[in-house]
Amino acid sequence: MSRAQAEGVIKTIIREIVQECAVKGQAVSETLVAFMVKAVVLDPRNEFNVDRTLTKQDVQKLEELCVGRLMEKCSPALDTIKMQVHFDMNYTSRREFIEEQHQLLQSRLSPMSREITDSRVKTREEVEALYRKIVEYVLLRSGTGSPSDDSTVREATAALQSVFPQPELGAFMSLMKRDKEQQLSELTMIVTGIRLFNKFSSKGGQGIDDLPSILNEALPVTSKGIENTLNVSQKLAWKYTALLEMLMDPDRRPGDCDVSPVLLKQALYNVRQHELFLKVILADVCLCAKQVEALQTKLESQVKLLQEMVHSRSAIPTAQVFPHFTSLAKLWSGLQDEMVLLSILDNTAVNLQPFLAAQSQIFSEAQLDELLGGSEVKTDEHRIIDSSGERINPSEIKTQEWLLPETTANFDKLLLQYNGVCGYTLVNKDGLLLPGNPSIGILKHKEKLYVFSSKDTALKFASSPDEFIAQVAEKAKRSPELIQLLELHQQFACVTPYSEMQSGEGFLVKPITKCDSSTQTEIHPVETNIVKSYEWNEWELRRKAIKLANLRTKVTHSVQTNLSHMRRDNSSQTFLPKDAACQSKGDGETNVPKPQVYLAGLRQQKSGHFMKTNLTRSINE
Image 1 (spheres, rainbow, N blue to C red):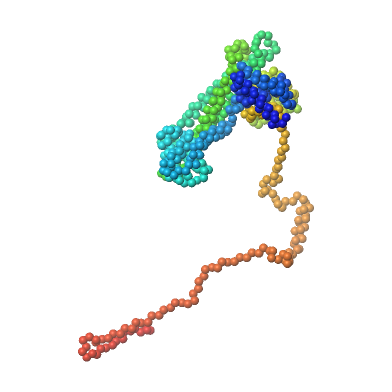
Image 2 (spheres, rainbow, N blue to C red; image 1 turned 90 degrees about the horizontal axis):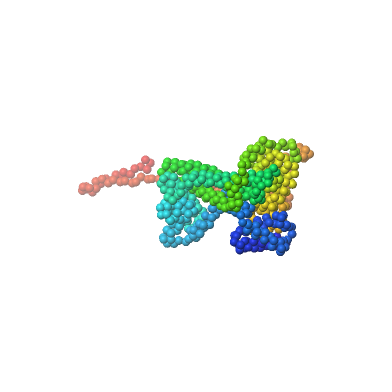
């Protein structure tokens, strides 16, 4: 059967199981059904052979077994599997949580953004409507107020007009769509920063929640609530462990503790899985608290810097102040992300509680105390303290490698197999989960690390580790909730984590465990370190020395032939003409005296005689 055919068969099986459960009044997800199908096939008690194609009778038997398991009432084992599926389908890393929230916000605002960038306004009314739409977009994108609040809208409009006046809409409309989207994002950050600055300066900030105060109140409450729930689950796990130890005690009298060991183990696995998930959530809450503290410190320093900048000068260039407003808005956005993340983590922890219903109905707290009587209930810490005096001597088993606290760096951060549970106790005591003590010594076998509850169990496990590892896998096949609880996905290649599982994924097709790969390393990654004149061969150095010595007595000649002429690279240089002037003649001038003659005796002379006098100046004068 090909892979495509196998996947088609599995999808059909899953679909039929989901429908049959729905008919019987039980709604189940395809992810849960897919894992249950794999768990039923792996269980050796069901006698399925994964190396051959399922017959019609096998398919019918598989569907009946899966429906029977999924329809069980008051089953701690089924509740544990449901809890694992729910957690892995709803929990992810901090970064992915925040990215999902940003993508969700962007998808919700994408129609409004598209309406703004694609609009073609012409009249004055359309321009004003578009400007109001931009203000509404800024408020929704920043999460700093409701567009239905008039005072918030007025304040946001005033802040936007100081940055982006309405007459500039014409230039905005002429931009490309991508540039418009970028400018909208920048305007949102700047306007948000201005409003936040006004809020911290007690001059505005209408509609903006006091996130620092809200987070400072919510973080301790959330952390305390998760810690209280964690303590309850841990106490239940300690009591179930003590009861199982009583049942396995060879010296106990018959009838002292009349209770099903199978149900006790299922209840133990249920509360241990709940404890593990709560520890993961609590670690994220603590990280969230540290992040909030760092963001608040940066926010206070940024506001103080802006206040000093604004109060000291009457006018500030936008190129200097706008980046600070943008930084302020980014810090506030970080606080908003932490607020959303804290809410998601709190809801995730609360939603795990219903999956403890089965074990709480079977074993009430009063019933557990009655079964225990006056027996001592050891905590995990007490068990580690009791075994802290034991220490592995590597010389006792030289064939195995042991890691000890004093000889290993980052000893407390090592990734341990089985989530830190003692593998020997799990096999030897029929599925009992006891925490291992790393200070005894960590066994390193095939690049994997194992811890144990005592020195004796460590030595016995180290004597034949492969055998015990195989027996742990067999225990997990009979109790499939252990696959997730002990993180045995690598041993069960056909069982993937729920978060990575797709409905219909084939379990009849063997996984590919080998692939062709190649790597290449550069000989000289840094070119500057290469010495071009370096020679390792002594004879090559001698040859170069003789060549240089012979050159001293040689003369260089050059010849040009008919075939090679006109093939030389010639170059010439010309100088541009410079501006010059010359004069061929000179301009000259002369001045002659003006003739002046005076006649005397022209008046009152009856005789008619007069006297002529020449007053002209000499030319040589």
